[in-house]
Image 1 (cartoon, rainbow, N blue to C red):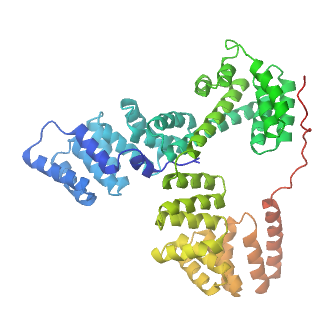
Image 2: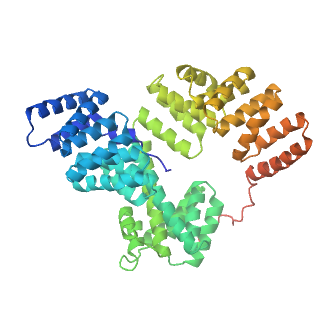
Image 3: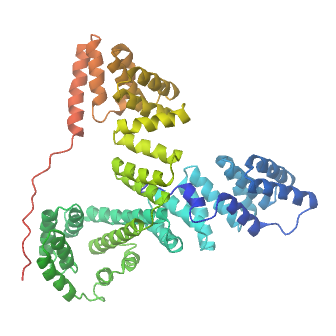
Length: 512
């Protein structure tokens, strides 16, 4: 995740100002004091072309302006903007950098430079200019959105959460912001937990955090066991009674939960002695994060992880309460996809398509989710439609080819998969799919070279099995034997481990 990548489309469109709007802002804030008549007319033509989205024409005009006045920072900036907006992002960097060299206070140039780096997949380079824009103009939502995306890409969750928290105030109806905020807090919690494990992987603090996870997974006996074990090791740690109360309530023991809840309410830790614990128990979770920003001690890291989890839950709860929209369902589909729940992602995408019927991007996402879930029968009609719209797309050729193979349309599957392999020979899933199709067709000799190439990406051993079958049918039993042995090894390693017997005591009543 990156947890939930805030797309560049969101950066310039959602809750902010479209790209052309940014260009208008740039003109308003950076127009030269004076200009010669010809130069002014040329600049006006270029700006009109930008406003009309005629980016190639605008680039040509600003190129002329730069040739006439290479030290004009606004002309350099506008040339960079025209290139960025016209999809020539890499070529936009140089004039934007030159504009800032000539005039360092040109904030629109810094914003476009940061966004351009982001679109080029260079978040590390994007952070400094975007951070400078936010520091100089705290109300610039576009810069905050772009900076948050760059920070998330770099796994800098704490700073990303600060930017996203500010955006959640100004854009409370944005599902993208709430989802990204929740994921940023999840990242903070993971970092704190990892630091705790680095100090002592078998400490009472780790047990308590593991118990929280088990409770979410409804493994209440295991959670109870860990909490009691931690309580014996840290009898004075505040908050344990509250944790026990939650487990009792969730496991159906409301009366026992009431006993522990009363103990929790009577528990009043000294805020002078344990300020971080006091802040957490007072639900001041932002204060906990502020106090533990540079924490290295186990107790502080424990409270940091707890507070970050609470803030993540709050963000996802806000996400869930937003009114239905295409954006909301798309974001929730992305979360489900990141959690390896493709069928749930498909359900959200279907809801999005009810609000935007026939939208090609959503249909492509839905086809991808169904393909990931291996529900190829449901994916087949959608893939046929998408392939008809973009018949030369190799990824669609592979997906449709596999769906056709499952539908026993082997010849057409071979044809499509062959085209995908010819277009992108390095696409190993396509090589594997074509090999399987040729084996199913009975053309084992033709299948072998494709399956050989696909061996490099075969975590579960299925390609080894197919290749073994082809080798056996073409008179190479010794190689087939070796491949089958490797198949057995890989398939066993990929199989989910059997559930270990629960080493957990039964849930028992509170100690008086």
